[in-house]
Picture (cartoon, rainbow, N blue to C red):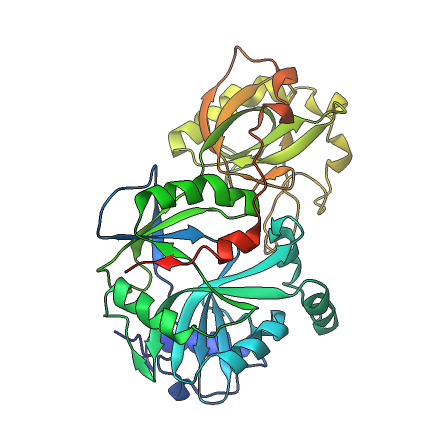
Length: 387
């Protein structure tokens, strides 16, 4: 069912907050088939692709989740966290307004296509406060919108309809779509989904989505599955950050790998520890803190939270304290990661175990699996076989 805002409830407050963030929303909430904001339906992580005739499989795009509301005279683009995205993607706003019919609400992903596939770094740069910079980047690195679900059509909510019905209506709605608007491929064939998981990563995609064909659209619920690549790497533990405002628990470990020149590069963090483990880590790592800064390869960043330092400030960090404590380059751990973004882990890695049998010098980039490039155009042209 549509999540219409309650004037006295959270939905109404979220809408008012969102409206203050944008100068692009000129359409009244009542003009949309479903009044924004709507929490997107989410996915739980699965270890493998299940087999069933009642499942639909789609590529998992690596971009910004977005729900597009097309009113009678305007478009409103909502982010996953219920904020407006319109001002950051003016070229996309104009195209969606032109191509989408009034009275529809479409769920999908904003992506940027680079020379080697999807470019998440370029996408991050689009979230800039200066309109002049945004307009310049809109020309230099134009965005695209990949649609994968339909919440409303012809002015009515269809969130209670089965996924297979919503998909068929979405295909009909976007039958004449042209770039930068795309329809994600879908299949019921398990073997095809397995092949997609293996091949599409080479174009920058993030895995495979698994959706029950008979499932309703459930805002905010983990009613789907996502299957991502899982790989392991041995990494140097070069430092850590404290847990929140405490000094008795470790928040995250800073991970490093040596490149071909012998330089230790910061590649990411691992942070999912139980509280008892966080406190024990303070004691376990204490000996490695003694004299750590004297010859630390990242000592130039000590005491200065900059965008270049490990885990440094960015427009994503929202002013969080990202100061860090150095450790002597002696300890190695094994982590699980999904894929790289440039020369860093795209997401936080999962701690698996300590590796006392490994030397820090063994923690090199050349241990990582090399992904075979894949042409992004072939992903878009994979077609649909959901019926």
